Length: 324
Image 1 (cartoon, rainbow, N blue to C red):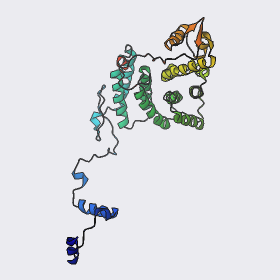
Image 2 (cartoon, helix red, strand yellow; image 1 turned 90 degrees about the horizontal axis):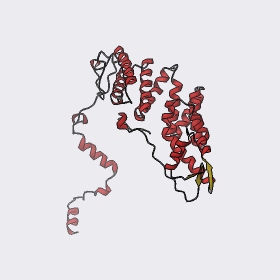
Image 3 (cartoon, helix red, strand yellow; image 1 turned 90 degrees about the vertical axis):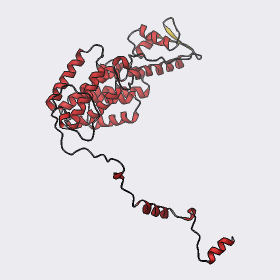
Image 4 (cartoon, rainbow, N blue to C red; image 1 turned 60 degrees about the vertical axis):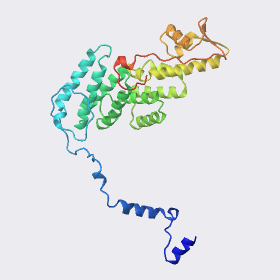
């Protein structure tokens, strides 16, 4: 204390503590300290945006490996439109001749590269629509829903530019069913509102919306009745959902009819099985006893959700996550 009194008598003031310094004062000191430092551009490389000039490809290479684009795209590395058209026809023929989808890894990569070339050239007409539609269908055939989602997202944009595209309703229905399959309720409602606003009255869109409503409301008979009538690509999208709804329906049946029996023939009809044999095989995997052509319903029954068997991604050449 004597030292503090001596300093004060000599006119020396104590430096304020950090706690007494305001936030504004801290910021002022920080700016003064960093004012003489070099700018951020001197510390690291600044990436420049893409050129505003339109790219017109000049490459005539039919096959081309997919590579992520840099910010600078050279025309000689991009296939010309005529070459893109030839590459598209080649890929369709190659896929049609492939055995058991064994060629998907190659064909899928080639389609990604083709989509990249038309994207950087801002090709958004019927050629772009056809390429994305063909690629999306191939993805559905092998269950590659990651790439399918990318294709159908781009198709949403292309259909706005090309509203008279003949397959617009088909892929609109796929988009609805995909949202149902991943339990994206908000997207289903948005698609329903959009279809109403656009006065989209196509049968495939109506069926997809009806299936969405049936799935959400637990109307299993309605859902499986509609499922029998939709195209095969629609069936692929809801494959996993189909088995999930069957299991939910089985739980409801057992709960409603306990203690008692539920006719196997009735279950086959309600849940859309192709035969009693296929239904019986699935029911037994669920851990349900079948006696006298009926399932036995009891309180102490513990159901097992069977795993849906499907060909592995590796076997099909799928390189991305699959929904089924």
